[in-house]
Image: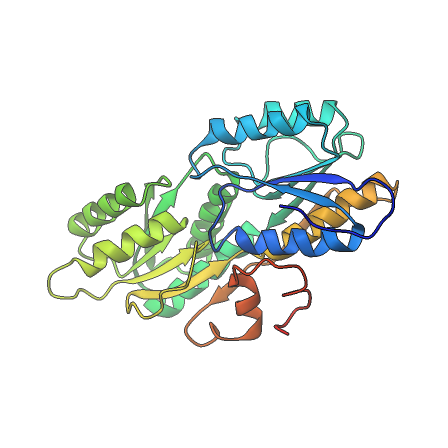
Length: 313
C-alpha cells in the first residue's frame, strides 16, 4: 500500500505485518498507519498471512523486509516464540521495530530500536470478569474458551480474568479450554463443553474464532438454552442481532498503527522513544455499539484522513 507524502527527500519505507489482513481487528490498524504515514511522508508496505496460524508465512514476510532494506517494521506477532529470531535479525540490521498488540520475549530498548505498543490485557481480563459478575450476580459457572499459549497477550488476559474472579467473586466457578484460530475446532470444543457441563451460564471467548464457535454451538442447542457469550477481538461487523452475544472487548489497533509509525519517525530523527506504550481496551455492548468511538474502533475504512480524530467526521 502506497502512502503519498510531500517531502522532497526519499520517503521512509515502513513495513507493516499484522497477524492477518482484511479483518475488523487489523484493518483499523491499517487506517492508523496510513494516517500517520501521510503526515511524515512515508511509504507503507502492508502485508499479512491469510490466516493467523500461518506463522511460517509471517516469518517469511519479516525476512523479506530485512532483505529489501526497509527503514521501519511494525509487527503484530502470530506466535510469541517463533517470531523472536526474525525480529532479532531485523534489529541486528538496524531496523527500528515496533511490536503491537501482544509482546515477544525480547525486552524493549535494544539500542533504542525496539518498542512495544500493547493492548492492556490485564485490564481486558478484568473487564470480562466484571461483566461476568454482573451477568451472574456473583454466583454461577463460566467457561473460558480460546486459551492460546502461542499468543502472550491472550494468556495474560486469561490469568487476569481468573485472578479477578477468584479475589472478588469466589462464588463463580471457572473452567478453561485450550483454543486455536480454527473456528470449526472452536465450535466443537464449545459443543463438547456445553454438553458435559449443563451448569454453564456464560462463555468468555478469548479469541474471535472461539467467539464465533461458541455462538454457533449455543445456537444449535435444542430448547434455546440461555448462555451468554463475551468475546474478544472481533474480525468484522459485531453480530449483536444474535441474542447469545452479550458483549465484545476490543483493542484499539487504529491507535496502535498510528502511534507505531510516529515512534519509528521519532527514532529515526534521534528523539526519545518510549519503550512501552499500553492502550486500554473497550467494552462494546448493544448500548454503545453505535457511538462514534466504537465506530472508530471497528471501521474497516482505512483511507487516510477518514478517522484522524477521536470521533467520526
